[in-house]
Image 1 (spheres, rainbow, N blue to C red):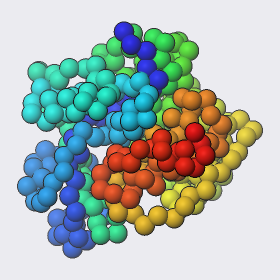
Image 2 (image 1 turned 60 degrees about the horizontal axis):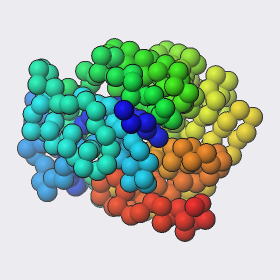
Image 3 (image 1 turned 30 degrees about the vertical axis):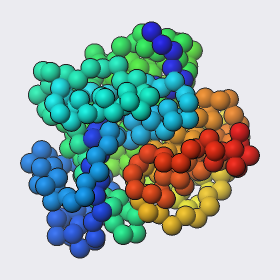
Image 4 (image 1 turned 120 degrees about the vertical axis):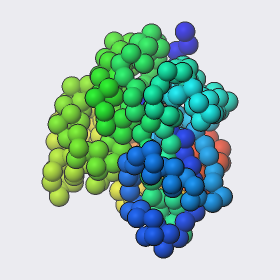
Length: 329
């Protein structure tokens, strides 16, 4: 069994991306700029309405793990797909990109493989319409604890909290990683996740997490306050490392009594899909290398800036080259 620098657990989703004007979003009843959960029939309607589709193995944490693999880390992604065309495409795509996908497609899964229709507006904002198929049914039985032996970092996806099975899988995985001597963390994923699962998220942060990543809306929603500093204080009282991204404002990073900021260089977005995912890539790469909190934040900002400069949620440029140009390698 291999040991991994970073293991991700999340919803294995095939991302289907297409450009769309705001008028199209209005006509189709799509709320701009957020992730909406949809049913299977709605997914089929939206898929049929898309033109010039780009399909890639996706999912928030899967995108992060793929970015880390491109940086040369030994990575694995634990997700669940059905043994259908999209599921086989997903598993093969992850392996081809250099990330281990230990769970084979499931022949008996009732739901088809998860997919997300992502509409990119002219201003770069993305509107995600996600059908939680087989991926959302991942549970504790789908997490082989032996995979964590001698591994370093576990990264969990808040979106998977939408079903009880995901919560049990997370708790088991975090315990296994900590027993192996590694660190466990989570991305809050979306303000709606933080609102739906407030008590569970707060309990997970307090009991099981070594680090948590979120944006300003997610943190203030989670702790029901308009005061960001107050929200971060509450999280930092229980969790070793707390990170808050703030769009064009500096990223706030806290570890114990240490607080630093990572400045953001304004970039006109082509496609904001994956900005948070690739911030996590840079941050976790720095963490895996034992870098300072400041360097981890700077690497995250550079990776996020790269991905919003083109269509698609994964890096196209060599992130190591960008880190070297910034004096970080």
